[in-house]
Length: 371
Image (cartoon, rainbow, N blue to C red; front, side, top):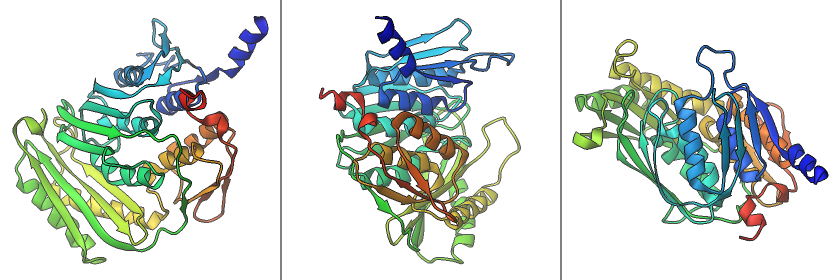
């Protein structure tokens, strides 16, 4: 008995601090290894978990079956024993402190490995200045999932209502099929840009805001490419959420199917200086050009998702060409290796990451157990 307890304690992942909480919980859920996080903001005036982190933990509890979660009175210590990924039809009210993208990014990692296809309604802030918006994840993450063989009519992200900070009021539907085996990928040539698409949205402000953003963005992008189409999306009434705001999402698609993205949103109501729609449109266009300059077959937003899906794939070697790694992706690489015994090899210049590993140790639990 003592030997078994010692072995179980050795398998428990242990961390300190609040950084990368989502990564830690997602990888713990996929690998089936328990997790303990100590000293969560222990030295701050307001110690412990924040409301958006507690909401994320509740979401993880909803999509799993049999999880065990223990949090101490001050919220500075979290113990998580993962259950089986169950899926099904669910609803979740996200904290307005962070956008729906904060929660959706992790669901994109977990959804393909559920026992039942996931169909979940998320409510909260759809677009803000911190997390990837629902528009960007719909335009870039879904095509990336399809390259791994996760496709079908049931794969979708649908925006029912938009919600801007601080009050939110948005609603989206995310549905994803189950895939037991992922296809290996060979993404080494991004190709040249063939077209640019985008969405300029506005809620509880004048519809002319969206048109002004489109004109200013086109004044820069038309110098490089003629095939540009930016949709305007002005929602009214209940579909417009509870707070005013506007923003833009742009995507550049290459001849080889690579999709790069950039986005900007206005300041939340009552916070910061007012932003002109012309200025926002021009800055968003410049951000897209910068993303194209960075290169790679996956944009900065989805680097960590691509690497995780490569880790969860078959024994075949997957290869992807990335631009400069973001700090979030760098941390993701380290945690993927710690959880999966996976090997990543990087080349010089533009970062080339090759995965060549025996991956049976890092398949979702209910697949390895045959449930």
